[in-house]
Length: 421
Ligand SMILES: Cc1cc2nc3c(=O)[nH]c(=O)nc-3n(C[C@H](O)[C@H](O)[C@H](O)COP(=O)(O)OP(=O)(O)OC[C@H]3O[C@@H](n4cnc5c(N)ncnc54)[C@H](O)[C@@H]3O)c2cc1C
Image (cartoon, rainbow, N blue to C red; front, side, top):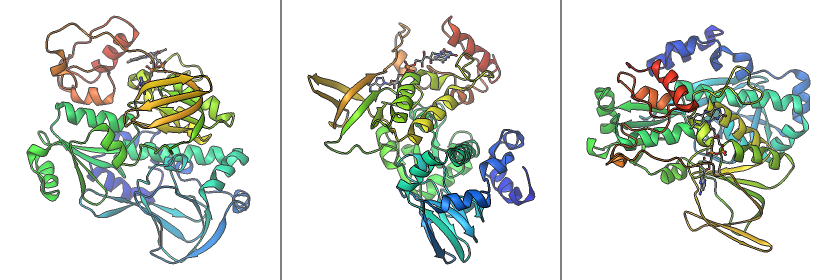
């Protein structure tokens, strides 16, 4: 880490099972503090002041709470604030101090999702509050600031994901299909998650099960906020409860609706929203599509060193949301009704979405092996991806990769670093 101020955080991270190797990596956000928590120059401060109002705050004032939506953007002019995470036992822990000339926020500022953290004033402070709609105006009008803010937000979320901070806690048996489903769904949607496996980390799991007044038969359980618990939630329930299923206003007519958030759908979203079109992207699972399950894509233009599918999808998602696109997951489009002058999409929950134009980017569905009882093992021992989730599940096992194309070769190369054979 860059300086001693973060030694407390390092200790906390390691106590919570963070990977020392990740913390020592030069690309870790905590080793790039000047980019992750930048200080604005006096000249930049002068410019941002045009977008908001200065407020006086006392110690203890809460600028936003965990779970709150529609957050404003705050710049500390004098004094300081704490960013606090809520742990599974309900206690709060300081993740970071936002000091003079630094700013609040992370990726939730680009969408209408719930805040993962609380922002609380530490001492008497002068704080610039930029209302959400002015924040968007600022991003468009101030290109240099937009770059600083966007990079910081991406790095902050990466830090949360890598070090399991501001995270929900998943307690379950490893190698059960529902535990794996929930883990994959959260990871693919960029939600920080801390996993406690009841079969390998029994003491910690038993303690959490007890605190939540559940029994082993209820596993997997998901703990979020202050001891709030979901028993084996469906993907839909996860999206709604954790606040990342964006609501779609009844009767609203979009300029463009894109079905599918794979590389094709996300590219369309970036171009449509950057042209000022009112854009909605719908995906039944998560942004990234097939590419989201690729450990490394070497042939995507602009990334000469290669990029993981999930990182690519994450960047495209942020880029389109920065221009105002809405990405709604997990929302499956069940049917279309197209007549002259009218396009309607029926979603899983009977919601009807109206649009002036439609892009279908639903990708491919793959053939499955003709093996008896295959479904019984899907998600337990049979997987259709080779990401860090599957690699962790197979870490001490022999694995067979079926297929002979690029993806199979890539999966074999990647898994050979993590498995016994
Ligand atoms: C493991 C792996 C590695 C790969 N590596 C590479 C590589 O290195 N280089 C390369 O060029 N290509 C690679 N590919 C192929 C590449 O990922 C695909 O060509 C690309 O993802 C296709 O993009 P797409 O947006 O057209 O469709 P997809 O990526 O298939 O995305 C379609 C999306 O539509 C959603 N969807 C489908 N139906 C509905 C519905 N009814 N309602 C709502 N949403 C729906 C799906 O959930 C999905 O997210 C790889 C593929 C895999 C699986």
